[in-house]
Image (cartoon, rainbow, N blue to C red; front, side, top):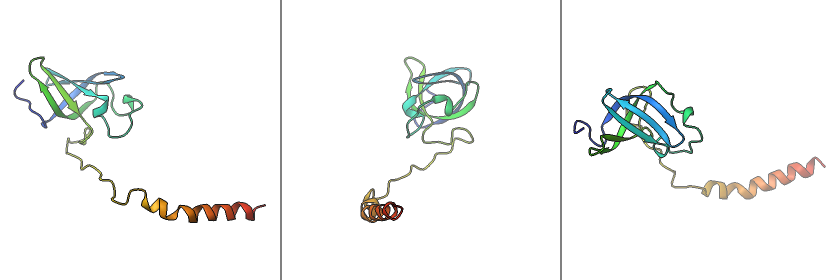
Length: 119
């Protein structure tokens, strides 16, 4: 299994889906698992919303367990359906919740006025 190493992008076929992850066959020779935490940065309620059994996808190798001939895979940083190209991570803005804090009192006042005007 030395032909595969960490951070390689490989193509495989989904052979099974469980609540905890996705099983992928690579080159009809190796098997890998995409743990549910490696599917998306967001909350994954249902893995079937992301992939289907029989679908061919790209995946990034997170770890190579040579002893057990098993690849640990991820799809959350790549375009797994089309070409396997890495996707830039979205960075949080430095402002965070500051704009909400700055406008909150104004929004509350406007809503109170809107409600009292209807009375």
